[in-house]
Amino acid sequence: MAEEKIPVLETKSLGIQFGGLKAVNDVNIEIYKGELIGLIGPNGAGKTTIFNLITGIYTPTTGSYILCGKRMNGLKTHQVVEAGIARTFQNIRLFKKMTVLENVKVAFNKNMKANLMQSIFRTPYFWKEEEETTEKAMELLKLFKLDGFADQFAENLPYGKQRLLEIARALATDMKLLLLDEPAAGMNPVETAELKESIKMLREKFGIPILLIEHDMSLVMSICERIYVLNFGEILASGTPDEIAGNKEVIEAYLGKEDEDEGGDV
Amino acid sequence: MPKIIRKKLLINIIAVVMMFLLLCILFDTELLGRKAAYFNGLVTIGMFYTIIVCSLNLLTGYMGEFSLGHAGFMSIGAYASAIGTTLISNRTELPDIVLYIIAIIIGGMAAAIVGVLVGIPALRLSGDYLCIVTVAVAEIVRVILSNVGIEEITGNATFGKSFAGIARVSDYHYVFITMIICIAVMYSYIRSRYGRALISIREDRIAAAASGINVTKTKVLTFTISAAFAGVAGAIYAHYITTLVPTYFNFSKSSEFLAIVILGGSGSMTGSIIAAPILSALPQLISYVFPDFASYRMLIYAVVLVVVMIFKPTGLFGGKEFSLSDLILKPKSKKTQVLSQKVNQE
Ligand SMILES: Nc1ncnc2c1ncn2[C@@H]1O[C@H](COP(=O)(O)OP(=O)(O)O)[C@@H](O)[C@H]1O
Ligand SMILES: [Mg+2]
Image 1 (tube, chains in turn red, brown):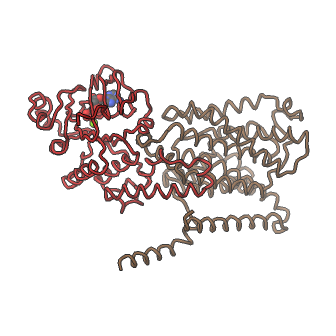
Image 2 (cartoon, protein in one colour):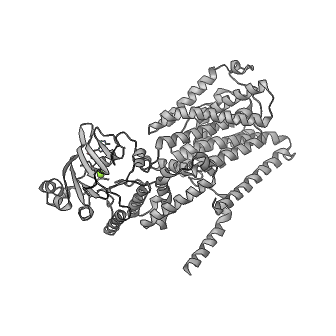
Image 3 (spheres, protein in one colour):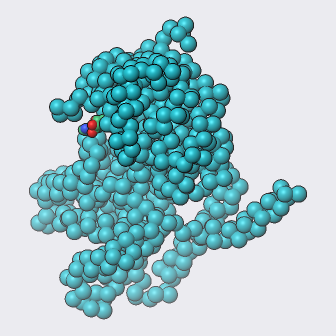
């Protein structure tokens, strides 16, 4: 992977301060084409905050982040998505009172071209584009075996399927980089195994790089190529799963503390 | 256009034409006798109420934000169009229909322009700023209209603060067609990628942005459209009532519109279409029988609103739509579905 010169995503001493708290401090992460990178760390370490920084939800107090060579600071969330970063949320954020199909179609919106007049006057182009978008959305749903639920409200899906729908919706934005925030949280072992298959399928089928925040250590260790460990907002260590598993500092700071942290944040 | 949609469209067109014919029979014949004019008025008022209530529902039901100043946008449409048509009528004589169309366009555009100017700063911020801002705007507009010299602009005599002598061109035939067009446009808007974006923002603003939706742009566009239709309703009102007084467009008028939206069902166009004409006519009909009723009207609204909020918080239609075409087409389409499933199995 290292022979690819420009990283898909690069953060340069990225940081944010909430009042006196340095939630994220001097974080340097690099993700190259096709990589699956893990981001781990105890609760409150600042993992989700990094996602919020990269997607323009928070404004960094220091540093910058760069997508395929393009500096992204100052972009609004929808512009970040347009540039090619898609994400899911730790505490599922679906459009609850919209159908499963519509949830995905919303994310296709940025690539749809029917203007206001075409939409209001229902021109042939409007119908054609709607039908094409429905087809594309159904294909995505099929990948996650959600096509059977297309006409149901998103809120009526079982928990594990809601998480998959969020991933499907993120994929519809046609991104260069996918950020997954604890996709296995709250899943039972069967669902987690399904999720693992889905993530593998994503890499094989789309080849998109993924940055994965995950609490389930066995999942992270088994599928990620490289792992960054975050503690108190700072990168404590990075390396292959084996290196991380053998790192003393990490074991002390993170693995040793894991028992106290079972509660998990929502 | 998909076949099923074409069928639905046809059914809806037939229903609309039938309603139009019914109105024609009621008001253009001797059927109602001397009462025809009175009921004609109720129906016309009901129709512009429908437009403004639907436009407000676009905000409360689909965008998830409140406007407590829609009477203000209505007044902008009313005054702008009335000034426009008065100036034109002073110079040339135009057929009613032309004057009416001009009034509608001026009313809608004027309110839309103010809508954009108010919407851009108010909607950039998330939170309930819009509600406060709209109240303020409506009050400012009302105060300005109370003090501005309409007489100096139009050259026509005014009586105190009232703007009289507006051309009476809001014939119910035109108003009916306008109402149908307005409803169709709003409905198409909701059922397009724009409406989908709008509803996704209502459901979860952050997730919508993270799905590539430009939240501010979508909100400003919707607010502008809503304001434009409020302006259209104002233009119809001005050219029906022919005398405008600023006090008509006060806070309690705005609250009345919002109450009707909520009673009909926030997020249900059908609810608004049914609730608006009934609730606009009901007080008048009741005060026909009990002359004192008018003064208790807002009190009764408040009581009804509280009762509805307790027993059916989602309003009459609770975000659902009634579809005549579904009623007619559904049993059939279900059968065909079953058939095609059987074919697939074989
Ligand atoms: N908007 C915010 N305002 C104040 N503090 C915040 C905000 N967002 C996150 N934090 C704080 O930043 C720290 C990191 O949180 P988070 O990124 O959610 O951790 P993680 O995802 O690693 O569990 C926590 O202490 C949290 O309370
Ligand atoms: Mg988190």
